[in-house]
Structure formats: C-alpha cells, structure tokens
Amino acid sequence: MSNTTTVDPFLTNLALIQNYISVYGYSTIFILGNIGSILNILILTQRNYLRNSCSCYILASTITNLFIINIVVLFRLLTGFNIDPTKTSTFFCKFRAYIVQMITLLSRAYIVLACIDRWAMTSTVVRQRAMSNMKIPKVVIPSIAIVCALSFIHVLFYQDIVRDRCVISSDTYTKFYNIYNTILSGIFIPMLMMIFSMLTVRNVKRLQGRIALNTAPINQILGNNIMNKRKHDYQLFFMIFVQQCVYIITTLPFVSYLLYATITMYSVKSTTQIASDNLYMTFVYTFLHVNFSATFYIYTLTSHIFRKDFKKLLTHNRFVNFFLNNRENGVTTAALPDEINVRKRATATVHN
Image (cartoon, rainbow, N blue to C red; front, side, top):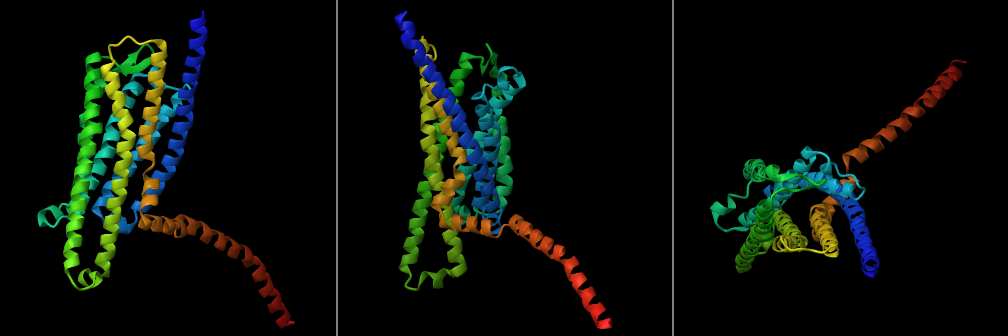
C-alpha cells in the first residue's frame, strides 16, 4: 500500500508535465513557426534573393518547414488535447509516420545544399564556382524532393495501429529505423554541414589573403556592386552557419534518445521508468522541432542585411500600401458629393 501511494502521485505529475510540454511547447512552436516561415518566404521571394542560388535552397527549406509545422507539429499538438486520429485511422497512422520522416529529411537536405553552394561560391576553382548558379537549384531542388520521397517508402509497410497506438509493428524494423535515423540525422547530415562550412571558411580566408596583397583599395579592385554582392553572400553563409549550429544542438538529444531506445528495447522496465522515458521522448521531440520554427528569428538576429530587408517589407509592403490607398480613395470619394454641391451653389449665385 505504501508503494502505491508514493508511486502514483509521481506518475501523475510526470504525465501532467508531459501534457504541459505537448500543449504549451507545440503551441509556441506552431504559432511562432508559422509567423516566422511566412515572413521568411515574403523576404526570400524578393528579387535580390531570387537571383541568388543559396537563397533558393533556403527558400525551399523554409517552405518545407511550413509543411512540417502545419502537419507534423499540428499532429503532436493535437495529442496534447487528447485528439489523435492516428489511433483510429490506419491511413493517418501511416501518413504521419511517412510524412514526418520525408519532409524533415528534405528540410535538412536543402540546408546541406545551401552549405555546398556557399563552398562553391567562395572557391577559387572555376569548375567548383560554376556549381553556384541559378540553373543548379532548378534541377536539384525537385530532384532531392523525389529522392527523399522514395527514401522513406519503407515506413508505410511497418507502421500500424497496435493496442490503440500508432507504432512500428516489427522489433527488427524498430532497430533498423533507430540506427538509420541516428546515422542519417545525427552523423551524416551534421558531418556534411561541418565539412562544407570549414571548407567555406578556408576559401574565404584565401580570398581575403589575395585581396590583402593588392595595394589598391578593395572597392576599386572589385567595384561597389560586386562588394555589396560579396557582403550579401557572406552574410548568407553566416546565417546558414548559425542555423546548422542550432540544428546540431536540437538534434543531439533526439539522437541520444534513439540510441537509448535501441539499447534498452528488450529491457524489462518498471511503470516509473516507462513514464520517465515517455516524458524524455516528449521533451526531445519538442526540442527537435524548435529547429524548424526558429529560422526566421535566427536570420534576423545574425544578419543586418536580413533585418534591413525585413524593415523594408514592413514599410513598403504592397498589401499595406494597397490598404492605405483604399482608405485614401475612400476619403476622397466620400468628399466628392459635398464638393459637387458647393460648385452647384457657386454656379447658381453667379447666374443670379
């Protein structure tokens, strides 16, 4: 009896904390993520960004993040309110599992491509520099989407409803799934990001060294337009660099959980241990999705050019101007009848 009285309140508190994380954590991610992604798209679709191949990859990643927020995060948010269609519908169960893996990998892949683009742009080798042009994203972006879509088709065959829960129905596939995700999300993608970022830094230092050897001022060597473009390109690199740091920080707990779940798969766990694992899993998944909702805020904090473009968006937004022009036209139109009446009275006075 004493054990029951000490364990039950603890389990209740763990379940309550887990629910609070689901409701308040995912609500914050959902709201701020939608606002940030929409603002990102509005800024990145401006002419000066659309002419840059790196911006195209960032835009593709942002659009993908918008899908993640409104599908993946929304599903998890609803579970906090005890609304979970994956428990009753096999279609939703399989669809969520598939779409989660596919679009999260796609978003990460586009950031890797942006890192590769920055390396190519700063390279002194002509062939490598040719990879950073507007023709490449038009082919690569849809191609990567197709590859990611095909890479996770296997999820559809092993995800099913078991005891009112949408889970993987095979222990062998669970091992494969955890190891596959650990290698892909925790090792392969961060490694590619770090390698191409270090290569980009090395290229930038080489370029700075070459420029330092010239006695003429740098703006005379390159010209003001090229200098402004270089500053814009370097700031894009810094934005991506900070984003990949955030990605690694938010992914490490997720990878550690996958490893722990794989190692302890066949262990006999107490009710308290299972509740603690569920709480940690909820925290890990919530923290993981911060990466997909924070891009706008990362770019705004790290780049003064991005902040400048954001201010322009607010002050020169066509929707705001359209609204203000309509108001002015409405005031002018409302004043017309009074003006006509005044003119009629003036004409009558002259005739009299």
